[in-house]
Length: 101
Image (cartoon, rainbow, N blue to C red; front, side):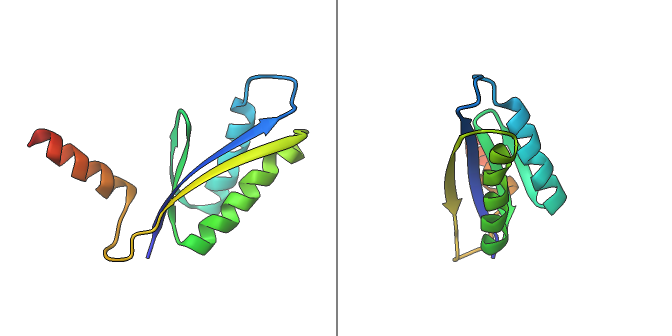
């Protein structure tokens, strides 16, 4: 079953407060992997198989080091629901239905 994961990769020690170039490069890695994703202002939501996503997050974590960052903090949240199939779109739809209510 698919999981939904939120990941935020934050480079430190870059000499700048801007992180958009690192985020863009991390998203290139996600796109190359062919994983369903949604970019948000505070992180990226991923959807897929747990092992595949954990491997992908590892590659994302390495991106800032390859771009010269001295330190990287990666935050990860995993929604692993095993009683039924879940998706990003389904979770959003469930809330929107309740709002219409």
